[in-house]
Length: 88
Image (tube, rainbow, N blue to C red; front, side, top):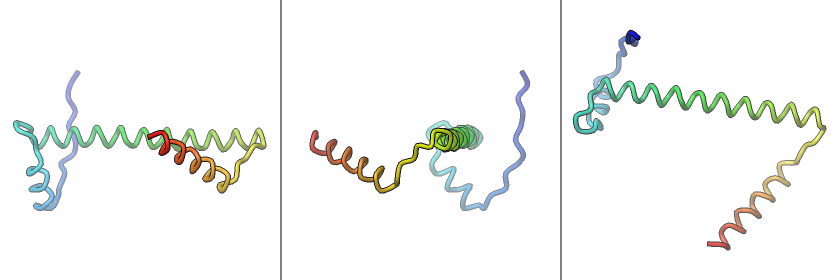
C-alpha cells in the first residue's frame, strides 16, 4: 500500500518551537505530528460514539416513557460517591 501525505501545515514559529521542545529522544517532528493526528482522530471517533449512545438512550427513553429527574440522578450519584469514599 502506498503512503499518503497530509497537506503542509503552517504554524506560528512559537508553536513549532514548542512542539520541537517536547519531542522524545530520536522522535521526529513528523512522527509527533502523525501521533497527534491519530490521537485526534481516535478522540473524535470516541466523541461521535458517545453522542450517538446518548441520542440512542434519549430515543429509548421516549419510546419507554421512562425518564429520571436530574435532581434524583445527582442525589444517587452523590450517594454512590459517598459510599465509595467510606470504603477507602
